[in-house]
Amino acid sequence: MSALIPRPRAVRTSPGSFEFTRREPVSGPADLTDAVRLALPALDLTGRAVGAPEPRITVERDKDLGPESYALTVTPEAVQIRAGDATGALYAGQTLRQLLPPDAYRSSALPGVRWSVPCVSVEDGPRFSWRGAHLDVSRHFLPKREVLRMIDLLAVHKLNRLHLHLADDQGWRVESRAYPLLHEVGSHRAQTTTRPFRGQEPAFDGTPHGGYYTLADLSEIAEYARARAVTIVPEIDVPGHASAILAAYPHLGAAPARRYDVLDRWGISPAILSPLPATIDFLSAVFGEIIDALGAVPYFHIGGDECVLDDWAASGEIEAYRRSLGLGSVGDLHAWFLRRLADILAERGSRAVVWDEAFVSGMLRDDTIVMPWRGAQVGRRAAEAGHDIVATPVFPLYFDYAEAGSAEEPAAIGDAITVEDVAAFEPAPSSWEPEVAGRVLGAQFQLWTERIPDARTLDYRAWPRGCAVAQVTWSGGADGFAEALPAHLTRLDAYGVEYRPPAGPRPWQRGGTGDRRHRPGAVEVGEVMRRLDALTHEADSTRPSI
Ligand code: ACM
Image (cartoon, rainbow, N blue to C red):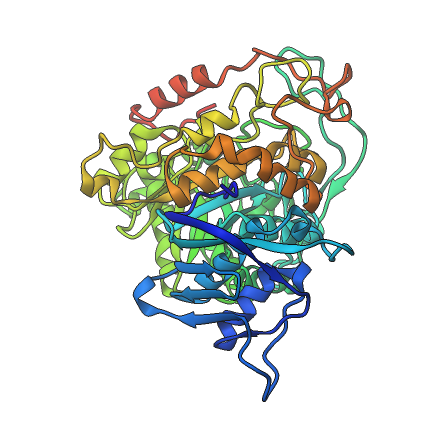
C-alpha cells in the first residue's frame, strides 16, 4: 500500500483518510514542527497561533525512538508524529508527503487537489547511519542551484550524506583566499574531450568549461543541507589527481620545474603533489578554509586513490625526506602522507575518509573511514582491521555505468548496472562475522561526471537507481521496492526529475549517432570488478588501478 520508498520498518493501514487544509497549524517544539513543515511545502503548514484551539496536526519529542526515527499515526481526525529528533520529524514529514497525492512534490499547490492521506500507523528508523550520494563536480561543474536541488532530492529519499568531490585533474571547485590561484587558474579548462572511448581518434569541443563555489556558497550549501538532515562530506583528492592544483601552484609538485594544465581529457594522470612539508602546510590551510566555510565537518575525504608515485621515486629531495622519516618505500610515504593529513583534520574535529588504496598501503589512523570502491573483499579486510567502512563498490554503486548495454543509452563509461542490481545490493553481507558487518556504516552511490556533462544527464543517471540506494540503506532488502517504484516515479515526475524510465530512454534522452553515442559492451562492469579486486591484493597498491 501507498508505495513508500524507502520502505518503513512497520506500516499498518486502517480504513478512512485525513484531509489536510492548506495553511493548517502544527503544534509541537519549534525544531520539530519546522522540520515537518519543510518536508511539506505544498501544504504551506503554519505555526500554532496563540489562543487558537489545539491543532489537528501534532509533533512530540520521544527520546525512546532514537536518532532519525519517528512514529506517525493518521486517523480521520488527527495526524500525530513522535520523533526522536528533528531529523525524525523531517522524515515523518517526508513519509506524509509520499502518502499525499504526487502533486505534493510540486513547488506550489495546484488548485483543486484534495490533500488526502490514508489512515495509517508507521514506525520507522534507519538500518544504516550513512546513506549517501557522491557527486563529482570536478569533471563537470554543477552550479550551486543543482547542488541544492540534489540535497532536496536526497532528503526526499531519507538519504543523509552528500560527498562533494571538489578537486581533481579536470578542475578545482572552491574559492581559496589563502591560495587564490586555485580558483582563478585551477577552476577552468580550455576544452573537453568529446571522444573518450579507447581506440577513438582524439577530438575536443573547443569550449571552455569551469566554475567554482565561493566560500559563502559553501556556507549556504552546508546550512541548506543541515536543515534537510544532509551532511556535506567535502573531498579534496590528494596526493594524485592533482593537475588542477599544480596548474595553479606548480611548485607543490613532485617535479617542481614541470608545468601543468587543468586536464581536458579523462583517465589517470601522473600529476602528483609532493609530500614535503610545504604541501602539508598548503593543504592544512585549504582544509581549514573549507571547514570554516562549512561550519562543522564531521567527515573530510582526502582521496588517496590512483596515485602514480614515479615522480616521488625520481626526486632526490623526496627520497631523502622518505629516508629521514625511516620509511621503506614510496608506498609507505603515500600512507604516511595521508595519515599526517588525517591527524591535522582530527585536530579540527574531522574524521578522515579515504578510498581503499589508502587502506591497502597501511598506516591509517584507527578512526579513518574507508570507502572500498574496488569491491567487497577489500572492504571486508578494512573492516576486519577495525575501520568503519562505507560501501562504494563500482558494481552496483557507480552510476556513471549505463543501466543497459544498449546503443540507445547516452554515452556511459561502461555497462550495465540496473535498478534491480542496486536494489539487490547488501552493504553488510550476512556471511560476514557480526563484528565485521557492524563496521559497515552504510553505502553511497557515486556520480562520476566524465560522461555526465549537465544536470539533465545527472537526473537520468541518478534516478531511480538512487531510490534503490535509499531502500537498501534505510530499509535493507528489496522487498516491495519494485512494486512501489511506478507510483514513486509519478512523484519524481511532479517534482520535475528527468529520471531514466524503466523501459529505456525517452527519444531525447538517447545517445543518438554522434559523440554522445554509447558503446555497448566496450567496458563490462563485471570484468572491471574482477580486475579491480585482483589489484587490491597486489603489494604495490598505489599503482593506478583502472
Ligand atoms: C575511484 O574510482 N578512483 C575512487
